Image 1 (tube, rainbow, N blue to C red):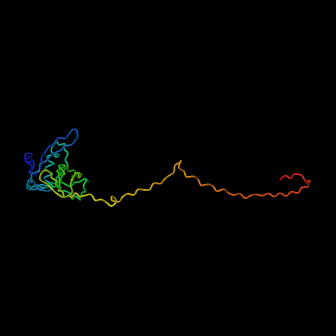
Image 2 (cartoon, rainbow, N blue to C red):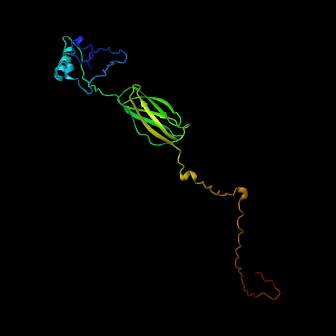
Image 3 (cartoon, rainbow, N blue to C red):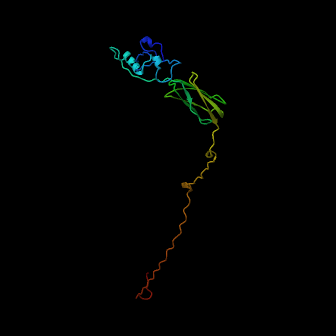
Length: 228
């Protein structure tokens, strides 16, 4: 990265030297490092820019300037910074039915940056802003007032790193189920108490006649009554 303040602080050219204060509220600190446009891509500096020193020698230099300094109570942690070309990439988008949400998503190595997303076509669907989080970004557009046709989707990081793709907004497909009339079930009539059907007349049961034949011989005289 070859910052201008390295040699002024007794460090080889190519080593970034910065200081930052720790917040008393959040116990955090941050430093913003500017990467020169002509910096080498990769995870390590060129040996020519670091005075021909090896990685071990560079580590020793850093230790001597920090935790190895006399009377130092500093702590040190090594991190790797990858330098590369800024990238913005959109995922392909399947056809979207008119009235459904159009979801635009993609990836970028510009963590924390704002990606500007535009959708243009038969009509302009507007502009959305999405922040890159964990290398991804996403925005949603409404198509309720759109026209069917092909649209161009553009993602721009605001610094000329752009990617584009296309999407078709189509007429919703009506399924067979939506075209089939729904039959109305025939209601089952349940008679109320005032509409109850009369009970069928009962058929009388014929009881067999019982005849009692009493034979009685009496020695009564003629003219006497006989009781049965």
